[in-house]
Image 1 (cartoon, rainbow, N blue to C red):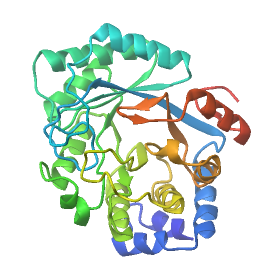
Image 2: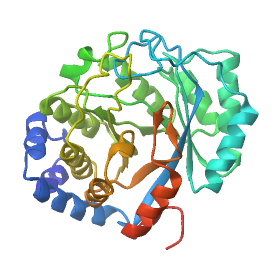
Image 3: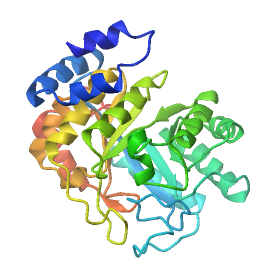
Length: 326
């Protein structure tokens, strides 16, 4: 089994890109079977970690990420908005908790964190959400070590900073920062004792080799990311990737299964693009090791399944929120 190779390398480099590529090319059901076994060895197979995401500062981002509705480089109809008030964010967090979320994630469309009144307000948000009894997560762009320490001091649990795609495909997607810039921010977050939430986006026109590179990089992080979001592109009119054809659902399953095998103890989150997946495809992803989802009707600016449909699907599959008692 491929996991045996992973175990043998716990104190050595992660499996090579070539090995990960061969893993992705295995017969689908063989991959799912092995991933399901790995998942059951390290997690409660009935438990799903539930998070909710709120855009606290929407639009006007100076980055040129080719998939993003919030980039100032693209004409998408998403207008720049100011940072939300602390009270508004806390009200949304209270509602998220009532609706079953255990973690509240806050995203700001910034290239990088800048010290000042806006960052001070984010620190207030983090402190307030933490006091509500929720896990806290933010995604704010590039981050210095000192800023990471301030976030940790305010009560932040997780910092999200996705690698998006493989290194060889990265410059096809964004030119305003580098792949290594992303890794530096992850190092800054880890240096402050923050948990890392880091994954990628499928369907950016990348070959399977680039997906292998992405998974290799994630599995090379030491320790592995605590949360690994597996996103699928949601094409946005006005962005360079607006006409990208949808990725076959089996490629999403392959990525989920490979992530579970390569990072056995991480939470693997079936994230953006889930609204476009059938119940059957989602069920196979859960079988293959996905054990985290976003709940709520929107992910920043993209749609998410309605809460009622999520509750119905989890009930059909005999799954429950991780923080709920069996």
